[in-house]
Length: 47
Image (cartoon, rainbow, N blue to C red; front, side):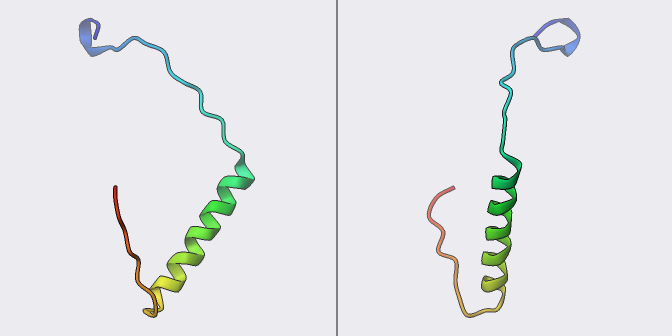
């Protein structure tokens, strides 16, 4: 850390394919809709 609280360093540029991200969100939305109906449970193991 430099004086005055400033940080110096390098940052990795992340590049994503927009349409793939949208597809993933659509799957999450569909999954959430099915879970909200109350006929399914989400079994979560991990973070």
